[in-house]
Length: 186
Image (cartoon, rainbow, N blue to C red; front, top):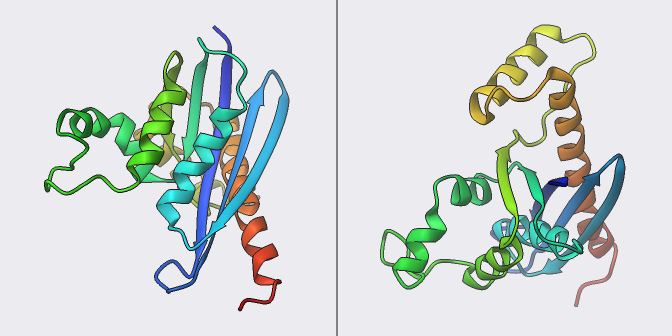
């Protein structure tokens, strides 16, 4: 089974303001090759951008039957799949545990369609993490927390790479935001 690593991140500048800018970034990695994607929306939310980052990454895949290792710093995204929230949502007519309509339903439905036919594994990464060159103790604590949360199947070198890619996705998510901030707003 072919394995594709997908790293994603979303961002939103002015998330609680009337007018805001959201961005998303993704990196797909397969057999040493990488593909970077980024984009964004005006007047959105951080959670929408987190979901969009994965949707856009999955949209470029040309086949099913893949093992997808998905790395994200979004608890919203990762916990939905690790805790099977979407199963309850579907069973309850797309209502959450508080009987309210599930936010971003159309994105969740699209995401579920894109994941169908693949084996997806979700891993939670601490966002905005910086590993120190001479910070062996703090780095080993961060690594220990990562493996406690995601399982022991990752070497320290893999962990460093995951952190690097997560930070790259954060930078990609901010490209659209930076470009939009340079434009005159009405």
